[in-house]
Image (cartoon, rainbow, N blue to C red; front, top):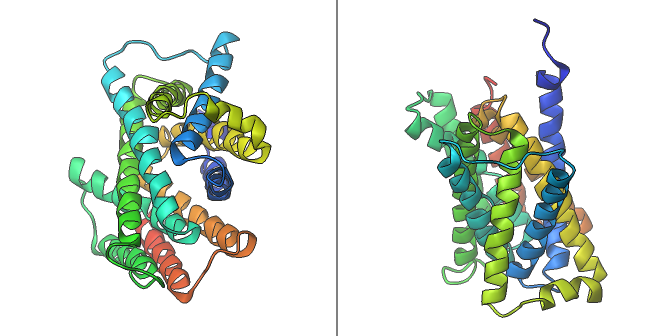
Length: 300
C-alpha cells in the first residue's frame, strides 16, 4: 500500500519545524501580554480563545468533541498536564527569569521525555544516549547557575518552576501517545482546550480579575492580539499538529527535533528582537542542549 504524503517523514519533520518556530515566537507574544496582564489572565485569554476555536469547529461539524471511552481518564490527565500544570509553572518561570533562559530550559523537555519513556516502558538506553542526557543537563545548568544575577533565593525559584513545567510537558507527550488509541488528534486538542479554558477561568475569577481580563483586550489591543496569537496558533494549531505527529512518530523523536528548532528560534527572538541579555552562559548552554538532543535523536 502506497504511503500517504501526510505520513511521510519529510512532511512530519516539516510540521515539527513549524511547531518549533511558532512556539519559539510564543515567548515574544507572552512577553507582550504580561506587560498588561497577570500570568493567569494571559493563560485565561489564551485557552479561552483555543476553546472557542474548537467549539466553533464542533458547531459546524468539522470536529467531533470527545465522548466517554475507556481512555477518558487518560484524556483528562493529558489536559491536566498540558495546559494546566505546564501553563501555570511556565508563566511564573518566565516572569522570574528571562526569555532566553526560560526558552533554553524548556528546550530540554526531550530529555525528560526520554527518561519517562525509559522508566515507564523499561526501554533500554545505550551509552551515547546517556552521554546526550548528561550533556543537555550540563547545558541547562550552565544557562542557569552561571547566569549573571543568579542567587539561591532569586532566580532559583524561577528555574524550579520551569523544570516542573518541563516535566509536565514530558508527561503530556507520553499521555498523548497513549490516549491516541481512543481519540483522534483533533479530539485530544479539543479536550485540552476545554479543560484549560475551564481551569484558568476558574482561577481568573477566584483571584478577582473577573471580566476585567476580557475588557483589557479592548484597552490594550496589542496584548489582546498577542493572546489571540497564543490561543489560535500556539494552542489550537500547534497542539493539533503535535497530537497528530505524536500519533505517528515516537514521542522522544518528536521532542528531540522540536527542542532543536524551539531553542534556536528562542535564541534569535530573545537576543535579536527583544534585546534580551544573551551572555556566553546562554550560548554555551544552548550549544550543549542542542548537542545532547542530537545524540539522543541520532537513530530517529
